[in-house]
Amino acid sequence: MTGSREADAMLVAVDSSVWIAYFRRADPDLERMLDGLIDADLVAILPPIRLELILGCRKSQRASLLSRIDAVHPLRIRESSWKLAEDFSIQLRDEGITPGAVDILIAAAVSEQQACLWTLDKDFDPLFEAEFVHPFRPA
Image (spheres, rainbow, N blue to C red):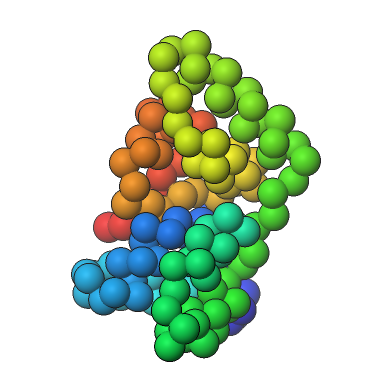
């Protein structure tokens, strides 16, 4: 990790959808924003996101991927994250909304660690709308 994070700066957990766009060079603005966040030492990654990226990565790109994601903050999924994910699931299910289990767990871990989540995946929208996790909105 580079530099030190400002005390009032919030970590940004970057979802696989953003990382995929980044590595595909699909959006120059997204690339600049993510590079800037990495340089500012504000990017975090969770184990399920890391695993998803590694599973989807070509062998020829693996070293580049690992060097990039190894340079960011690892967020942990705590035992309490699982309980919070259950609570989120129950609340949404009672409203007729059933997000994916991994998405709920990611949201719970990010929320619990007072980070925000940057994703391009609309599946997280109900979690943002319920204010379970704060979205990162690039300027």
